[in-house]
Image (cartoon, rainbow, N blue to C red; front, side, top):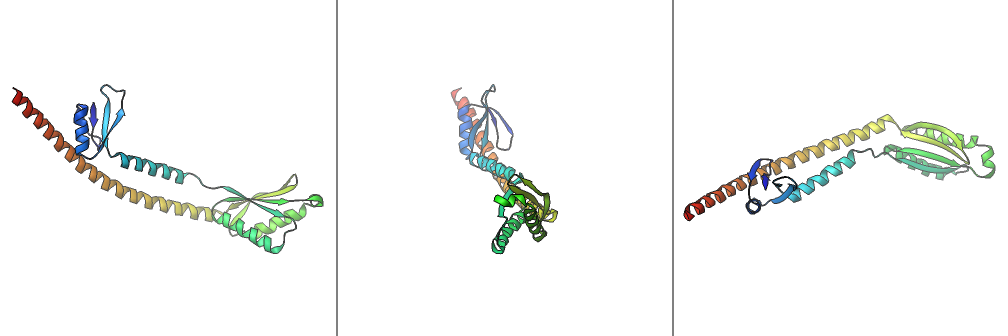
Length: 212
């Protein structure tokens, strides 16, 4: 097989048994990366570290995706002040978290004939949460419901994005330090592997000379 070292260096075409010995000496794993090649290609790696780094990359990719959601809060037209304050608190929390909020006023019976009350309630809510969000979709009636959408203000979104950016930078620094330590470890292992290879070659030479 053709063997590639832990740092991407080309070791050359060697017997599988020799490659296994090199992997054992370097405390690494022998992983076949191109089984259909002629000869097959294998690489010396720390498989545990490889899988760990893959998980880190996948986790970072998920974190970098947009996490904004649309939350929904439902009101009754005849809501008392206490319930209104509780629901308003939920709306503010969602907006401050960077999510949009769909606010629905559910009309029942004769309430459908005077939707203006629902519009006024939604406007009151928008005014009272104006520090956290603004109206993205104005109140409109859809069947028995009146719906309005609130979006977090730019400052809130910017603050959340800035926090994510700083967090990403901090994680990148930690990963860079980990990568540096891993590279140093792999370099030491590669040196050991090279020495082991040289020792094996020297032993083979001595064996050949003895047979002659």
